[in-house]
Length: 105
Length: 105
DNA sequence: TAAGCAATTAACACAATAGTTAATTCTTTA
DNA sequence: TAAAGAATTAACTATTGTGTTAATTGCTTA
Image (cartoon, rainbow over all chains, first blue to last red; front, top):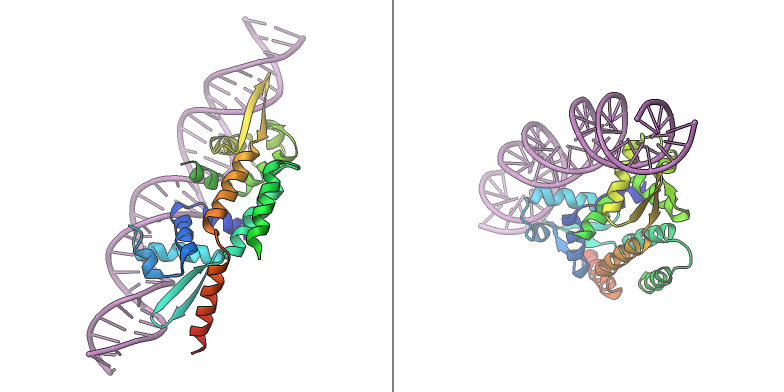
């Protein structure tokens, strides 16, 4: 199920850091790996998990593979889950709804 | 770190189901366990993980231990994370155009 | 105080994660 | 065509997560 993949992917600090990096700019696999202490194959597997979850996309351009954020899926999954869980009529719920709507487009 | 505990706690379908149950009403540990196929000790550990993450609270009342949702922490964590990752809407589109142009050639 | 129910903790087994290095695939370029 | 670089896959190991049953703790009540 899609939501399982998303939460599984987010349950890892390095993977959340990768998302944070990609929120600023697209990067090659090597550039991402260069920002971590772990090996390139380890980072490659993290990227694979993120891509399977639909949180990032990738494209080979010549020798390099570029990764970029698929922010829609992240925001949609998190906000819809929060709405499902969060009880009715809370101030925070209204705030979240506004925030989600703002960044939807 | 708090955010690690939260995402770790959410990376489990039974735990997310527990949160969904608790979003409707507070429940005793036994009532929660009764809704799952797994054993009561297994559910008790899931509850412990959720409580350590600050997603639920509990209180003993006589013979029973009641659990209820701490929705503030859930919503705050998810929305602030989503906001951190997707702070802007436009730059991603710009990159998409660049990618598309590059791909055409 | 003994019996019984609710819940958690203890001890253990097994599957899944996450890292390593080595090998492979794909692309560029000398 | 051979060499070199980027990235992934393969094979393996260590750790963690998740479930089980058995034992323990806490509370109520006969």
